[in-house]
Length: 388
Image (cartoon, rainbow, N blue to C red; front, side, top):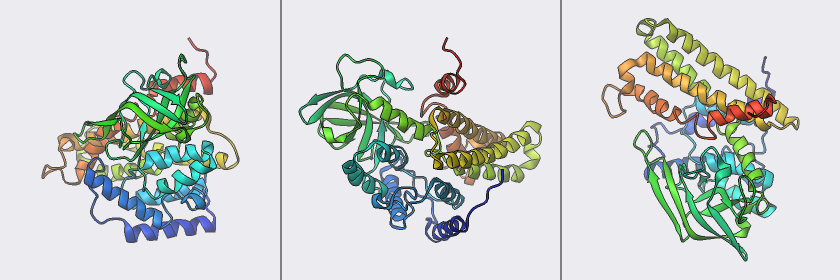
């Protein structure tokens, strides 16, 4: 497969590259799992918005640039290639934003999308519950319709960014007596609403990356519902498709670490070659990252021609999450004990990047639906295999 870009696409790439070269912070921003880091990332993303690079594939009236998904892939390649800061509002922009474009009313799009693109509003995802993780159909948090409002009671957990975010989106059981995927509604909740309590959860690295959210008689207007009452499952599955497919994890996110891994191998070749399997793993990481990129361009071409990704997004999710694990594990194998040093250790130097990446990669096969569940989806809906 040979990619050939149009003159307009090449001009767009050059524009993005030049802007990033002039504007990417020279010093790495603090982690966005701290209050200071979160706000600095919000400022960075607002700067992207002002330059027209926040959500390049959204319509201009909603704060985008009116580009297609090919341009988005180009932007992502340049963004990661420039070492730009991680995107803290990706749950809102890439997941909820795409959902609103498909399912939101004109009023909802006009209100929420520009504020999302500018990062004036920062979003958390509120799906998982103590007894409903990958099995979202087991959700029990209730939203009782009372006139023009829902009254929400229940608990969500593992809500990324919820500590500092302004809003959360999630599924709530709005029809009494309903079971499984029936009777759920997709609601948007301001996290400063009376009755909302947020408790931080520490990640493996000790940072407060997640949170539990408790809802006690939280009043949310009916206008904050996406789609029809009781039909939220259909909306949520579209959001999950965006998360498992291309949008949350673009190929560039893995191409850049794969290139960095090659350099790490070259810098430590004498030690790494004591185990011949390491060189094989490095080669596989690079080839898999490039294969994922080519597959993404193929998929985007199909989407631009009006096709739907559907259950195939589960294949993407399995592939990118396991690729991430392989890249990071191979780096740790090259570094040996040095790779276990925290960033605060004088000897860690730039190698601390790999420990952070390794710890985060462990979550990949779990979030966005566990890979075990994704394999079931592929078996049943892609391959047509019977249920046991």
